[in-house]
Length: 345
Image (cartoon, rainbow, N blue to C red; front, side):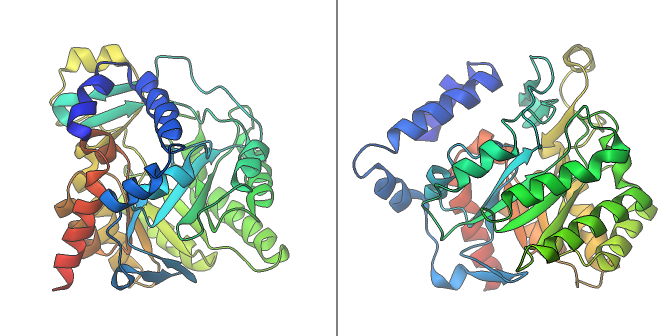
């Protein structure tokens, strides 16, 4: 079915196609039996696919990455495609428009997306209100949190703390995003000193609110080995529940898209197939560096079931789809599920 719809979506600008898909899928799911039919087609989960990780039970290992449903608009509807978890956000304390449009581009020869969205979102309070109306509890919901663009880095911890406190009762786990390349200076917070401070403050707040929620960190794929070693040390010293590897890359080497066309598009992070090996290498390094004691969620360049299998073989426990979902449609969830099942045999 997606093969029939994809030409229409790809005839639109990427951001328009995104909103068009959301609006129409939401309306379709209101029709009688639409959700039952969607689940019957796409959700092939069985009890044998379930996995427990950082105290949560995921019905399968496939998730939807942050950035797709960044305002928690149709997370219940997306659950019908068979995802075991859905990560909403990145959300900031205050609503912000993000960067100037156009800011989202397809690199079709590379099966990639270039984005410089800039954390456009409606704010943490609006997200919390939507999540309070959550209908599906068989799918884990993660909250990906960030800082507002106007907040100086030295005050960033207050933004992350606000988001954690606001969403504490409506999400199942948190992800600290300090790795987007589209908020000026944000990646500087990945340095050992500021990152350790932010995570320690958040863990203290997390402990004070009752039963602590799993706290994860999302990292960039463009770090040097010594920086990744620091991430491993930080994960242990701040008692992180896990790491998400990885965010988008700013590396443009080896792309099939013409150089002049890329320069015309301007800056941004790249996701999709060009990220596949890079993110897998990060997963392999972190898994080895931590002795497999820190769970890793793979995000980046999962375009096929084979890619999902390779992420798990490298040391990941769960995988997340984003650009592969755009290029290959919801059938990719089933394809990844089947590849993971075959891996067990």
